[in-house]
Image (cartoon, rainbow, N blue to C red):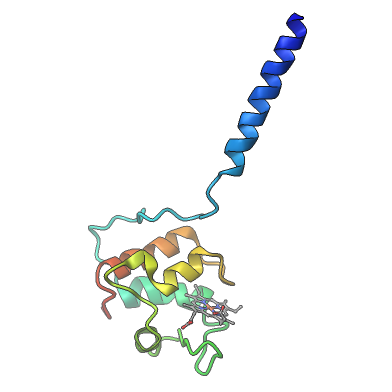
Length: 125
Ligand code: HEC
């Protein structure tokens, strides 16, 4: 009898554990930027290098997506493609795309840098 109860207890714990783990959120990036938002992000010094390292192997001039992330062209192309949303930064296409696992190898801190840059007005600074 006692063993049976113990078994039921363990089975219960297991089921509860399974339910909770299946509810785990898939999003890998928190909506709140982890970078220090008091530091002004520079498009040329902080954001372009992310594109240089992770995006320009595809996003060159004339890329099928229409998005050119090469130095000198990237800012204008970002604006032309309307992929930043200054009013609701985490709904920016560039951020949502990366957040949903785009082809690139950029890190979570890179995503947050991009989000913070948008939050600060997506300046060409
Ligand atoms: C392996 C190639 C590849 C890499 C690397 C890559 N992309 Fe893309 N990207 C694509 C393709 C192909 C599309 C068009 C299809 C789609 O929307 O998924 C695209 C589309 C996009 C779009 C949507 C453009 C629009 O106007 O609809 C955004 C934003 C974007 N990429 C951002 C990035 C950023 C930022 C990086 C680097 C951090 C990056 N991509 C790296 C191939 C790539």
